[in-house]
Image (cartoon, rainbow, N blue to C red; front, side, top):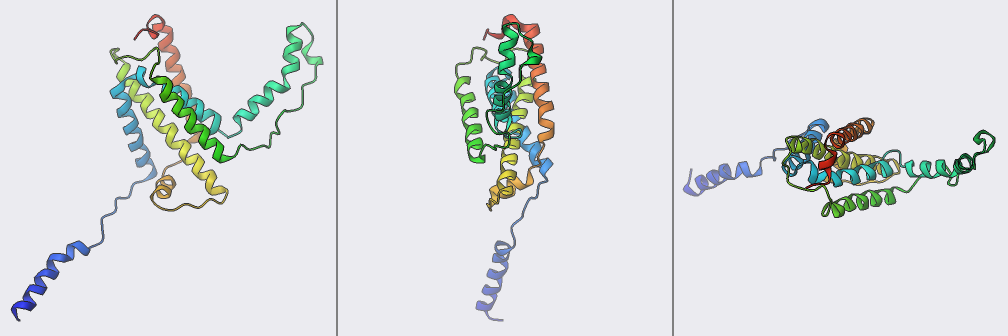
Length: 222
């Protein structure tokens, strides 16, 4: 074997690992969700409950108005409109059972377009960041439970954001939308946990109520 042939063989051996297939890490939906929760929880732990409370409240509002069913706002408007005459009758002392409710102001079958729901969710969430800058309750996490509760609320915010993305994505696909690439793979992997979100939101407000009940004089003090 000549020297030239030997050099080619050595070069081929050296270059072989370069052309080997790349390593792909596969994560389950649950594992990916736990990672997102860990990132949100870590951020919340570092900041403390006070510094992310406004963001959490506006995110929950955005989630309830735009994600949960998509017709929540329509139902609320129709309920107030239909029961308006009965409310007026109650205020002036009439028998509300004798007052017929009005027809719904907005058709119950009306579905708010997905595009506007996504924009509304983003806008309401951004308002949370805007108002959080000058929130009266912001301050350093000095209380004993400030960081642990910040961890919980940070993880909850991450869940709300990720679940909103999954719900919007599923509805986009249901209407015939097509999108490929890593974003689609990421959203297809995440599980839809919409049925658990109301319970988690209720736990959040229960914790907030208990904190306000026992620390009301300190709530507005940084």
